[in-house]
Structure formats: C-alpha cells, structure tokens
Amino acid sequence: MLRPAGGRLEILAFRHPLAGLQLVKGTIEAGEDPGAAACRELAEECGLVAVGPPVFLFDSSDLPDADRWFFYLCPVEGVLEDRWDFETADDGGQRFRFFWHGLEDDLSDEWHPLFVEVFSKLLPVLKALVAEP
Image 1: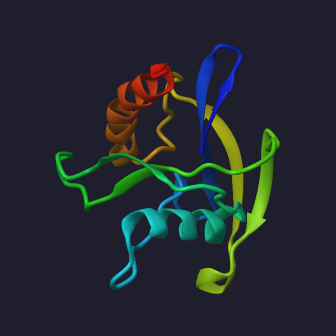
Image 2: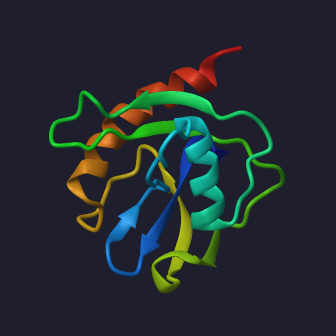
C-alpha cells in the first residue's frame, strides 16, 4: 500500500507486538502465485482487500542475507485512516498497529536492518512508478 500525502509518498507499515516495525509480508503457500500471496497477506495482516491486480515492484534476491521476498503494490478502494489496529487470526491472534511511513523519512532502530535495505531499493522503484504517465 502506498499513498501520496503532502507532496511525498507514504507506505503502509505496522508495529508488530513482538518484532518491531515492519511492512506487510508473509509466506507464499505451495503453488501460490507471489502476487496472489501479496493480496492474501494484505487481507490476513491488516484486513484490506485488494480490488485490482497487484503490481510487481521487485524481489529481494539481490539483497544480502535476505530470504527471497517479492514486493507488490496492491490497490484497495477508499481512503484509509492515518492509524488503525488490526487483530490477526494467525499465531493465536496478534494486534498489529498500522501507520503510514514516509518513504524518505529516517528509519529508527525499531526497523530490522533488512527493512532498511528494502527501503533503499523501494524508494527509487516507487518514485519511478508514480512518475509514469
């Protein structure tokens, strides 16, 4: 999820109760298309339903020490709140606290170092996508 706000881009992020600040992610199930997995994880982790096909951004295969992650932009309808909580059904239920993070904002040490690397790659990809006619 991405939104323009005040002349800048913001990405949907959340505070995991045990693992700090993160982006929505998850495991691809056997035989599942990565784009379909992205849409499923969006619904499972924050309750949002994609309304169109996901747009592939990049994968993490060139990041050191990374599992292979696929990044997609999943369109949803409507205007989302600035912050909200969502109770997940997995792992016995956990409350994720969602917020919007400016793509060019500094990352605190609450972010895992791998996400810091992801942001460095994500920013130019998303800027190029938004600049396309």
